[in-house]
Image 1 (cartoon, rainbow over the protein chains, first blue to last red):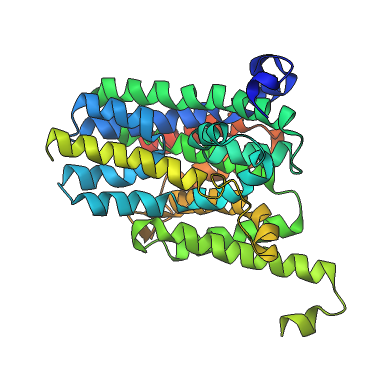
Image 2 (cartoon, rainbow over the protein chains, first blue to last red; image 1 turned 30 degrees about the horizontal axis):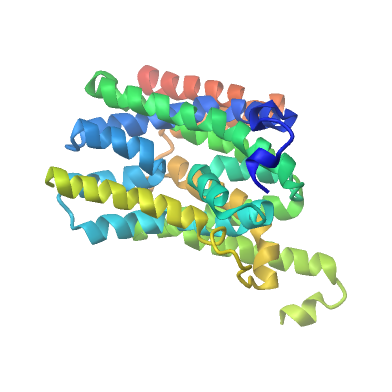
Length: 246
Length: 109
């Protein structure tokens, strides 16, 4: 389905406003995180136009923060790209989820959506629409979230780039971003299985934090999915659970 | 790093963002996903968020923190308390940040 086939412009659909509203709670935290990333770029020896370009086109905060020291230190290109790839691997898993929402759209639209599909967009979509609705609803919902999340990241990021050294980083303002995600995590704990999966993921991520390239995130994902599947399995077939798990 | 090399690096990074975010969304034909993986997907966003958040609270520079005199701990505790009292993310951020600043600037933690 092409956007032009929708009965009205995407931003006039009620789901657009819903998507935007759902992002308001986390926008402040995302902004603080963007500001921190902008400051980090300003303090690296990346030329200003390149830093602006990076903020606008890369749009992946944790990958940007991970590669900045490598770029400043003159690391080879392959190492810079390999690091970003590892930090971004969780998006590959998200993309399989996005397919259930947007798989029927033309490829050009899918690409546009994918570029803007950051962590929070996926979390919000899963929360608001656990079962994929028709694309006539999920598309405006998605763009409504992007309409707030993208500028909430980019504007502070560019401001941070511009202010650079004038903002004291030792105040730990980046922690506001962590707190936003923490609140979001709490809002997603809606049954025993998700609580246990979250606890396992957190414990695994902290226990393997010494792994390079943020691979601890992947370890935590694998552990949480495995535990979640076991819980689902036991709930589905309690009588056979012990035999099946053996 | 030369200007041109920096430009190539940044453009490559943009391509990596696009490729990782679109990998399973891009092909026109359905890629066969094993059933267990489809089912497990529902845990992924939550687990990914926790995996990002937990080390930000409990570790520094790739190591577990070894002191409880760390401003992030009371900040996270206060944020948690606020969330379960009021159920609002904005308040969670504000309260946690204020507690963090109080412990950092007030007590030097």
